[in-house]
Length: 58
Image (cartoon, rainbow, N blue to C red; front, side, top):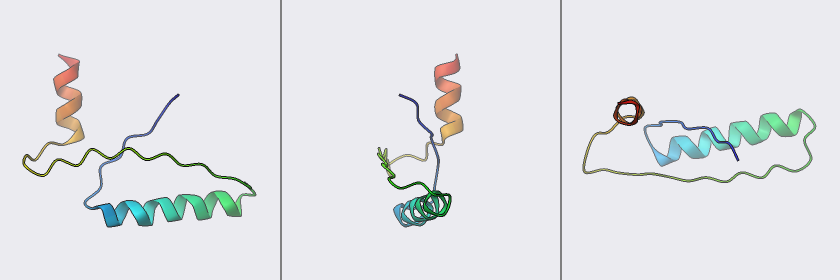
């Protein structure tokens, strides 16, 4: 099972993005859309996806 990672400024932005994705797929004729979301929300440190990739690439 694959996945897509994104970095957004807020949970609210995630809601807007998911709505846009679902609306686009619906307009394309897709009858059923299943979305699974996994959120990694850490607020005690400023860690970016670039940092995470760098750490596992070493």
